[in-house]
Image 1 (cartoon, rainbow, N blue to C red):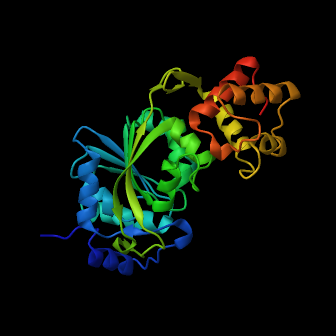
Image 2 (cartoon, rainbow, N blue to C red):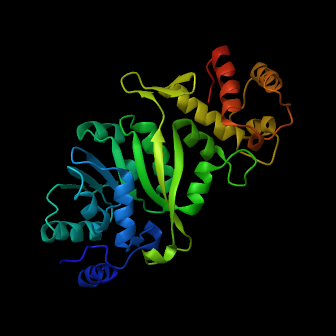
Length: 305
């Protein structure tokens, strides 16, 4: 019986055959534990009717196993060396239902991509360098992608799941928390990768919140924001966390996104409405607190940043 691409010896042979040295600056670390990859496939709940998005396909280690369950895989890979190898592997391993797109994952239009291929699910071992910004980008841009099953660095997961007061709590935690729920499914030791990264990884489930695909309306509990409002809300959050150790009011004033005096007065009033005082820091507020303040400011007049 032929070994899977993810077998350490097969991966090593492929890299040697094609003279590939993995690039740390691109966050290239291949998962070479077939049992873990099979566990990823099982937990992702892939079925034969689905088209799956995979970012960072590498040499096809995960692609091969996805295709045992899915109808089609849309693979994104930037590294021209790996693209060349992948094309050869597609022939050798009969990966006929893999569509390879040679582009920078951070520059793709995921709304267009998800619509063109009817993608509702993403399963990927994300390149470490782009994992954090890519999760936010896809959640914001592609309402059709309802679930993501991702292998990411443990420290990124800690940022996604951080609550107020945690050392990893940041504007990123607020933004991603507005767009989705996150759940760690299991841990993956760094020794399962080639080459081994500096930190352990986790496999997570990302469940996008309800969105209106046609009207670009994003919902969080009983609140609804348009796409443009979400972007303004995210700018507001960035301003609040610009100087996280300072008072939130001072952070906004020093961020370059200065509110008019009457807006600042309204924000102080809203802090009191939610039971806080004007000296509070952003890291002490929850998502709902930020939303309540933002919506009050938004309803008063559109923000100018």
